Length: 369
Ligand SMILES: *Cc1c(COP(=O)(O)O)cnc(C)c1O
Image 1: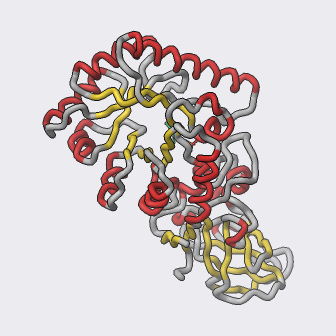
Image 2 (image 1 turned 135 degrees about the vertical axis):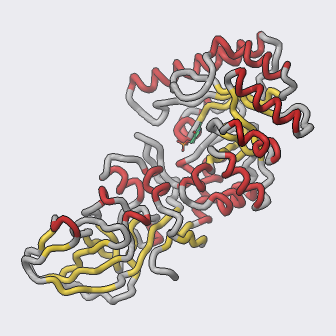
Image 3 (image 1 turned 90 degrees about the vertical axis):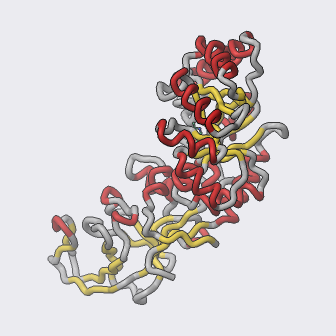
């Protein structure tokens, strides 16, 4: 094993998918968010497992992510959650990626690319902005846009929206989500009134997938729960983290009282101690703001002392007997030997587990177990 790797527990991913599916209606489709290299876990391997589990759709954010999946032989429907550049439209169509659309100019771009490729009834989904303020048409314009989609020769494959606070248990937030849902239903009505079948209706990301069955409609789009973390305010113990970040002690140094460690000299030894050097740093995704977290060596936790460098960091191991080249686990599921999960590291740094796993950089090999 190389010194620093991200171990990916694909069985945990599979079990999470089965658990999520068990919370969904029989006829509701599942669209697993596999964007950003499956939140850092490795898109191709996760997509293969998702396909084995019968997942119908995979959600991506870039055309290049779709191309990578198609090249790897992934046949599932691919839903593009963000807008692509006009120059990417031909690639989008050639790779059978279903785009979200919501304005005439963009509908024209897709329609022209489909014509050029000689594809009829190319499927698109209409995005509706019900309060996220990101992409989507206003609910009152949904009927008009639906007509435009169909008259341009495209297939109206579905309609969707995205919630901005569905992972919150705050009373106002719960009400806000209910209002977003009501606005979404009104957009669907507008499409029907325009004489067009709304197709696959979907709005639920992780939190409503697990906790609001009335919002499942025809498809759910879970992301973070697939990778083992509860969204926002929610907790539970059914999900299993999928990634662990593991490194090895590359040296052990004797440090005398009064000597300082790392850049900026923010840490000084109060007494004589031993310091383990770990070949993991912010260029691997262990960001500087995580200085001070505890890492696990031989099942015991030790604090990172001083600043995290680009490629290395140091850990105060006191007088404990630790062998050079022993594993040190930064985060992961219990079975990885970790003491912290990505969720706990995120909480400590005022961020979310999504950012912790996405930050693990490309030079860290993913090892699938
Ligand atoms: C990323 C994303 C999801 C999945 O979100 P999670 O919070 O990870 O469940 C669903 N829908 C859209 C539009 C997204 O961008």
